[in-house]
Amino acid sequence: MSRIILAVDPYGDISVDEITKRIDIVKKYIAGVKIGLPLLVRFGMPGVKKIIDVAKDTEHVILDFKLADIAPVMISTIEPFIGTGANEVIAHAFIGLDGALKEFKEYIDEQGLKLILVASMSHPGSTDIMDHVLDKIINVVDKLEPYGIVVPATRPHIIQYVKKKLLSRNIDVKIYSPGIGVQGAKPGSALRAGADYEIIGRSILYSPNPLEAASRIAHIHDEPVSLR
Ligand code: XMP
Image: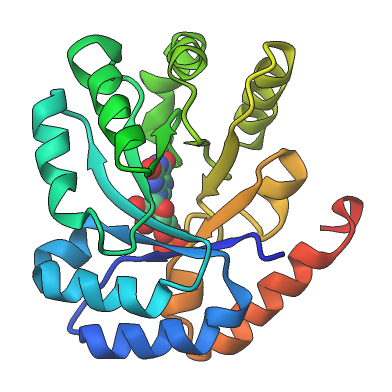
């Protein structure tokens, strides 16, 4: 079973057809794709639909529009994607429940989608604020029961901390971990710390040889936990 979620964020003058081609090439090594806001902004709905179409037969087709707003705005953002084949949606956890995540989660459930909440972020600035309120964020996760949470590979101690808290409170969520490769964490390191998936973008999609990069990382993921 693959543990790679391919982050699809276009840079430079790459075309949507070239991205689609690269996804197709690495598809047998990935568990899913995460479609970022840069893709929507550059290529619009037709571009996003092309990516969804090529990724449809993977397990996770994730819309990552960094949602952090009142519920009606988040719902209105996601509504056009209902029925496209996307099945998971990322929103920020720090925005809280009433008026935001509570109503949004009800909508997501009604539509048969899965919610993933950002608990902590991979960039250094996440330690300024987000990591100080991690326990409060875990309370939001506990109350809302999302399908998954995002916790950074760049700070494995945060993955370990969150994992321990989840286990002690019997909270069953998948951990998605970005920050592998270009942001500095080594492939396999987040899984070793307790994550379920590693979100990896540039070091696969923009590698001179995406197939080789994806297969190399998949093989690391196949190693016993102690060797990764
Ligand atoms: P790279 O190219 O660095 O791409 O492998 C990483 C992907 O992960 C996303 N990212 C995050 N998403 N919380 C998130 O929800 C985070 O802390 C975080 N850090 C990175 C980024 O948008 C890109 O798609």
